[in-house]
Image (cartoon, rainbow, N blue to C red; front, side, top):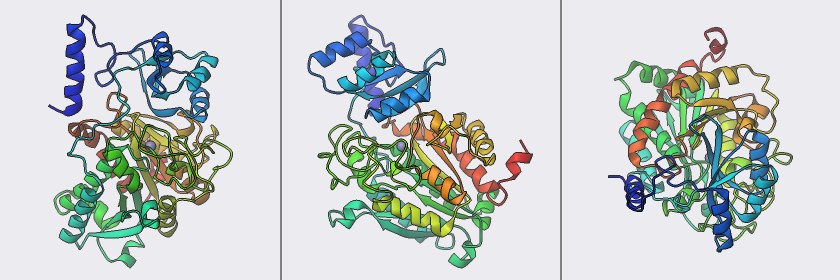
Length: 426
Ligand SMILES: [Zn+2]
């Protein structure tokens, strides 16, 4: 039995023996009301796992700006929107001012239990090295930059890419390119795992699967499973960590709850960085950094994108069962009609919902707005899994995530030579 499942089963057993019943989704446990939350705060709890019903992205945007660590969104049995995350007493006041009712989730842990079958930094790198060694005709390992800790000589972690495609570098440079990214955010371990699985699938299915053959022979495929390698190491220790580990701007020690130093790498890109989304407070979960591209991780991705100008970028995050496209910083729809058209196609393939990024909440300084706004590329985000998965789903859930998300990845590879076709073949 998986650890999380065991945990839930034990909680269920305890509750049943106490004459209670589980009234939330299986991974969430008990759902208590706001009175119980206030009582918990009154008895000294400083930060609480919560869910809340909301109606508009403006409400979530306001909570995000108040420093609430928003984990993800889902829907209740009546299909009403629910957001999940943590709240402090002052953030609860902001929710109350907007008339939102907040549920307390006493069984949800603020630490994660990482199933040992997930690949940590060294294990992911070893797999990537193995692919490049075993399949040198189609796969090469590329170091695209240092992590922040490496720049400080605190650790030896690089940001690694696998470049997959048939032919030498100069021949690949001529082919349509697609970039897959995982783990901008430390704790979103299903996202790095998915990108690693995709790399494995591509190299191992070559000459066995015609769809994969077409991709490897006709495309220049880049996969970066770990955009935030320092953060991944913190997350693997069980910390509910989101940002990188750069504490040089203040914000306090990291790895102890959602606050502490570190920069949100996906609020640090150079587009609409200073007027929407992103926090100026170093301890906030969405601290944007002191200037655009202040972080070595953001610089590495920027330089790869500038060098290769991929037709598509797909950045995997977790969780919310969502496909997102630009803009994130404004509710104005993008001029490029291929973005919503392809986004909806990806949603149909995955079974996820699809929306413009800002419909979740307004956020600036994100990769996708920069890639579209500055370079006119076609970037998407996939939020893998749902609230019951959290950030530490048992590894067995990767099977479902794989089946949900492989078709979309292969679809992007397939249409990368002519993305316009989505407008004529809907
Ligand atoms: Zn994320």
